[in-house]
Image (cartoon, rainbow, N blue to C red):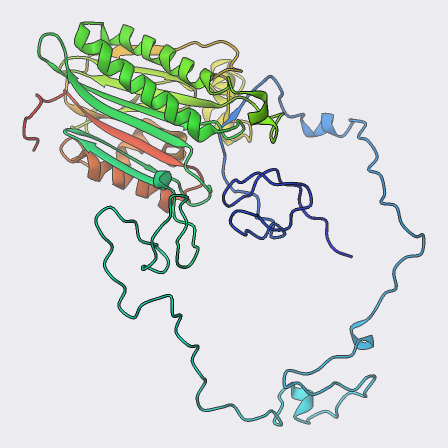
Length: 445
């Protein structure tokens, strides 16, 4: 009896909507009968008041009886391997109900000596006439397939030669902008990157430089989390770079930027009813956000959710610090004194967040904080895809390179590599911002 096909609403490979009974994806040909193993990660989930029941309470739940499939009352006949005809590895029919070979014979040892001789050479498959012997070099702006290295990539992201789907542009992103940099990677377990970032720099009215970094993590339990994180990071970055040169106080600018990012994410839920026919019960797009502003004298952070900012001094004999507090179930348990931090973050509910950007959020409460460090250092702005592997400020300081203030891109690459070496269970995004902000155009190092 065939095993029941999993009921999927979208293709696990290309996310094309599926219809009931589909065995293969009509867009990319993905075999839907191959059910992927459940991910061994801790995705960001919203917490809508539903807390899993403890085991002792779950045992008392009156679960409904699963209906049995209809069919004949006669059970199917049971066959033994010896009842079925077959052939051996050499193609010779096996005798049915044959007595076992005598002990010590070649057949008893499982080795056959009557196989046909192997050929000395095997014929090679004729070359594909569509592939030239010496493929021409791609012209300027032409994308070449990562699989066959010769075919052109069409606008839909597929090779015109071999049909191979190309990696998404957001699978790995890097940006270095003067003294600050950011890196984002899909990780090793997710099928797409649901993180996003924005970095920028501007001048304050007095001519002092300001560095801006925004990092967002899409909520995996919501629909279109990748679109939510991208919209929020772009809107928050643009709002900060517009407000700071006008003389808005950095902490007030941060608060308003988070409000603007929230409106951008909320607008993603305002779509026609026909756009949600394939997923009518999914939550609205949602994401978390953490951001930093660095000037020559001031450090401001703002956040909603469980993405974090850390302070790492250049002089490692000085203590590092975590600058944000998570909006999460684990943080609530620790704040209420019900669990230690180690116990709370070891719980399976630890990553359920209590604050996020999205149309179905309880109430938007942007958090902002200002600091005036008395020594140089770097600000690490990251998603939980990184801090899962370096949770405390001391652990984060141990993996931040000593020259992070002068080599921000290299340091961001090292931090992402640390998360991937640790398992890469989630998307990983990190921005490295030096403090104090050096004058624009200054040579660092």
